[in-house]
Image (cartoon, rainbow, N blue to C red; front, side):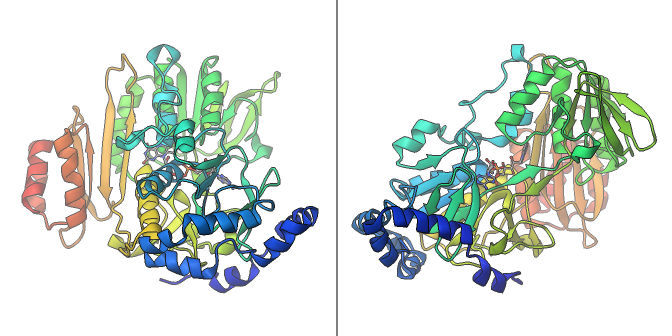
Length: 513
Ligand SMILES: Cc1cc2nc3c(=O)[nH]c(=O)nc-3n(C[C@H](O)[C@H](O)[C@H](O)COP(=O)(O)OP(=O)(O)OC[C@H]3O[C@@H](n4cnc5c(N)ncnc54)[C@H](O)[C@@H]3O)c2cc1C
């Protein structure tokens, strides 16, 4: 596929600021500086080439070589581990770290530079178990550090230490210099990398400050600090407004029901989850939310958020002039890929994010991007995509690191998978757990009454099953979905339409495999 901004990336990445900082440090230590000038690239292009040849290549960067190279530069750079640097300490970083450990390539070699104060965790928990009311056993760290979400080990701060992984906390990377292979953090640290893995994820889209987007009581939720702040507001809240009818909005609204709060969801579309749900499917979920006391204001745009005399948010004013009172507002209007300061590596202008190939290599040798921030070839559907879901964060991390450390040269062949789980707190009368696999294109056939199961099948004009959604399936039923979506069988539409139950419909689909 077409690489964008290749030439620009190759020529314009030099950051004067980083170069000057390096020079200042080097000048302070004259003898180290002389050595450093000779060995500026801690890892030469030869060693890149060797590593790319496979595991043997990686192993050839022997401990002795690493010790020699790093002692040369030890006085100049602020990270101990310089062979591999991951920028971003989120979901993908946690799974990448695990893959490094599995290949025996973490100890003394891997550094993670994180904006957050804690090691990587399973981010989806923030709008699920984390928001349970205090008396209903909310999830808290260290309970959900990666990689517990996929049944793996819980990687606490001790785990990183024990595995020789250097983690720099609360120090985001602010500048990047591809020529000298260095990074500068917000505290002024200059870091050296051999291979760089960008896993900076996304940031929550915000309402502009001038319309009240930054008022006290207005929340966005991306990290655990945001979730803590929201929990403290929920403890005092009476009336909440959720802006946005997507994942975040629906999960936060479900959580608010557990707190018995007066909750209104406002969004511009005709129904919830507009990018995935059909109107008919959305209706079933909306009714469940309404039974839990949630109100919907559909087809509405926010004009501004107003503050009360105490300066806190007090209401949402809609474009049609109507007013919805609120002491707490949660904004869930999407997310933007965090490409800064790596724009020069090559950003895909259509989907945003850093463009990579099917092995997560960017346009610059030895720089990779994974997780939410990566714009990658979605092989199955022959298009470039960014996927903001945890399954892709995990799988892209593993695929990328295996490619980097071994002779694997397989193209990433991702099958899109989304899920949500809500109303799971103790005492909830109805738990929700749905999964979707594939592509939601073509006509739809819906089977079931949501009592508790419902299934939707997306079928294209050739009668190929493209996508499948299931609510409240059994483990065996859920395990059928990826097989269907991956093999895209031709299905008998008439038979599927006449299915008398979800079980029956799944059996019809299975028989077409
Ligand atoms: C509240 C919430 C609920 C979700 N629920 C679901 C769900 O139910 N199902 C699902 O499939 N997906 C869900 N997701 C999406 C899923 O969590 C993401 O797809 C996944 O976390 C992506 O992993 P990542 O490592 O790419 O990004 P992230 O996990 O976001 O990690 C990126 C990290 O990089 C850091 N960072 C950014 N810039 C810099 C910098 N310059 N220097 C250093 N660090 C930096 C960030 O602070 C962050 O710690 C949810 C997301 C959120 C926010």
